[in-house]
Image 1 (tube, rainbow, N blue to C red):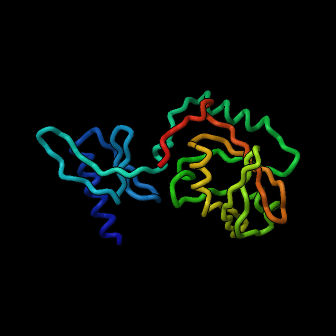
Image 2: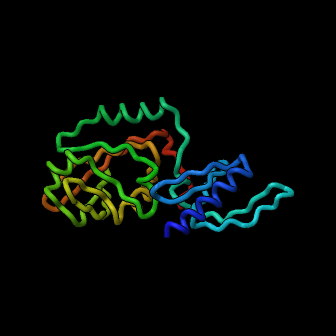
Image 3: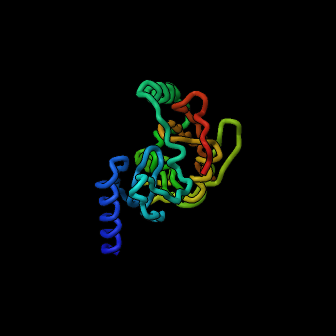
Length: 197
C-alpha cells in the first residue's frame, strides 16, 4: 500500500513541478492536487496532459469542497460572537465547523467536557433537532471520554446547508432518549447557499 501511495505522491509532485497552476496537499483524507478552486484527489483519474496547449483534463466528483466558503475574518468573528452571546439554560456546547466535518464519511467530534458530563458514555442513535422542531437521527459513538457523530451527520449538514465556519450550538433537551437542539450561527448571512454534492 505504501508503494502505491508513494507512486501517487511522485505523480502529484511531477505535475506540480511541470505546472505552477497546481498545488499539492497531503492529508489524512488522501492526496490532493488543487487547481484554481477545483480539487482532484488520489482516487480521481488524471488524463495525459497535452503539453502543447498546457491543458489538463480531470474527472471531478462533488464533495464537501463545494461547500467550502471564502469568508472574511469579520464574518467569522460575527458568527462566533453571536454564538457566544447565545446561552441556553440547558447544558450546551459550541462547535465551529471545519471542512473535515463536512465530507461524506467523516465524523464530527463534540467537545469532550460536554460529552463526559452529559452523554454518560452513550453510543447509539440520538436526534438532532432544529429550533422549528424538525429532527434527524444521528449515530453517536462514545469512546475514551470523546463523543463523535458519524452516520446521519453528513446528511444533516446537507439538509440544512451547513458550511465551513458556521457555528453550531448543541443544547441537550432530553438526556434519556437523547435530543440535541441545534442552533446555527452562519458565517454568511444569506446562508451561503451552495450546490449540494
